[in-house]
Length: 129
Image (tube, rainbow, N blue to C red; front, side, top):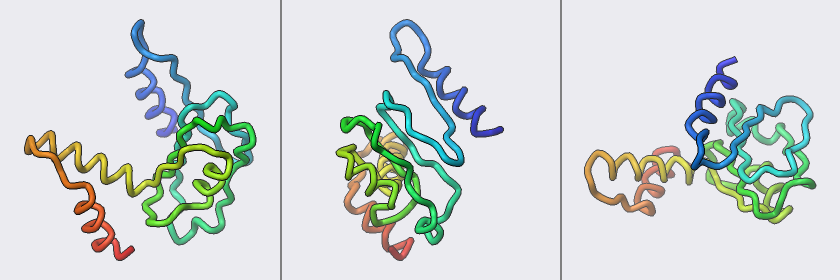
């Protein structure tokens, strides 16, 4: 489906002589995380209110130095990120990804650096979180 097309497009951006070896996997249903993963991204359509019912995968094979990202826009750690942190992985919240993207866009459009702390406060106020 569309998810596979987006992943293939992303992989093509990283291919070439000077670029790292990249592999992307769509994990659905019951799954185990790949042992050699350096970056794990949870990009589910499950909403914030429904996140309690989605159980995190087993991180027992996950390397402690891996980055684990949950793109869910929540102000608290999700069960997915809690499970990753318990294994020693570096957890990154979706709200932080959004703020970084917005700050980079502001720099691109205006040439000025954004105050990420102020952006986070404004976003939290807007989202009422």
